Image 1: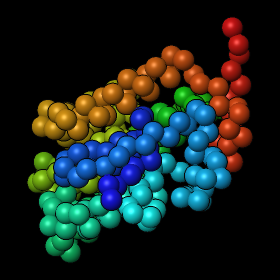
Image 2: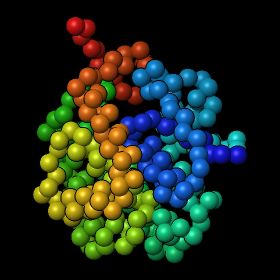
Image 3: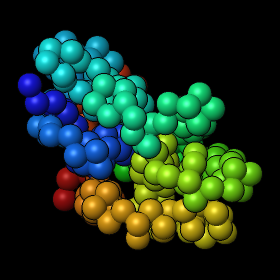
Length: 234
């Protein structure tokens, strides 16, 4: 049975899973979840993922949420010897660390500044900017100390996908991060070295830019976490 990926077209976690499946040449069916229509908030979707988060992977009746877990599962089951998720304990530990860092700190702080104000009633503040720069500074330090061409090794891993798509949202809002030289070099090298993967992220970035210019009205979602922003009708 072909894998099914329930995903949004502009969400960094969804992009990372799509990129891994493409890179490893694993066939899958992409099922678009219409966030604007609240398809992820339905009772049927909650049967797959009670968190009502996106993406969700379906593998012959097995449902898995959380993009980090999805990336790890795909590698372990379908490409257990892949360079994308090395089996050596120390090498794997570095990849796992970067995934945790992205989830807890990097994407958490960056998306709160880049993505949340586009879709919900949040403002970009000096304190939010401070947290973005803290996250960037830490990642810059990790890249400098490890001294490798990629985020966790000399080869592309699933950690690069997550961290890259988090960083992409900074470019989407025209945030200048050139002073973080290691990150800037790593980010642009990803674009050049993996054009097929970059195309997936680039298309998403165009969508994000569209929503920046045309903020969506999501008041109908009654979101349990994020406050809805009222859109003034013209």
